[in-house]
Image 1 (cartoon, rainbow, N blue to C red):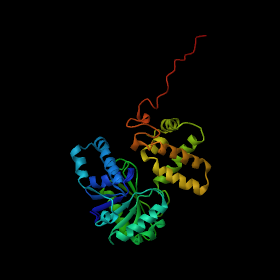
Image 2: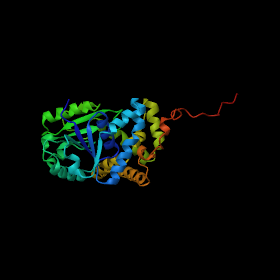
Image 3: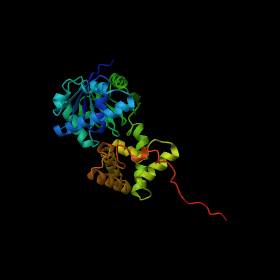
Image 4: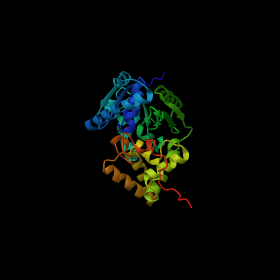
Length: 309
């Protein structure tokens, strides 16, 4: 067993809430930190909303889910949230400026022995290691969405991450039910997003350029490959916020007109409250999205027949 028993998850969005509950479910003592009581209330609702998925997918009962809840605490004061933390997992928005500020503030209040890990989906640890004041105890720990099912954790160190810290976090990932994926070097996007983001962007470009509508694009991919979801269903599962920020940052840097237009379309959806599965509507409506219906991939019936000659 590792020495990591007390975990603070900083950021309580879709993935932060999942990470927090999964760690608590696997018997870690967890504190969820966010910046306001309103954010904490939303976190509590997100975590409670996981109940149906855990009961259905893992075949557990309410008592087992409630047992996990007993190990979760909440805080809006960063110093209090990390006062006893063995590990802090940062799961805040994918904006470098916000992450720089967060790590500078965290470094002032966290105990010297605390390991810092970023759940960043695209950014490498060397970008922020100087902010932490402890580069040897800093690395990235990236989870896939729906952590109880898609249970991989990619571990990436910087050139200054201590090997013992890296190994400890690999072991921790296994303890909370993940399949650890150790990376040998820094790679923006890791393995998962190096493959996934170009796929999602290709779907967004087809939509933005008016080639086809999202459900048609998803249907094409699912039928032709046997995949359970297409790019737009995946975007709904992730939620719009993180893809929007990733796309906007990259498209702005590269002056990519198509992807800037795609970011605008995602922003319009967000402004309309269509955040994906978490809000009940994105490219599909939930809890019973069209892509999960048996009829989604069936050929449309036709009454046309050939007349006899």
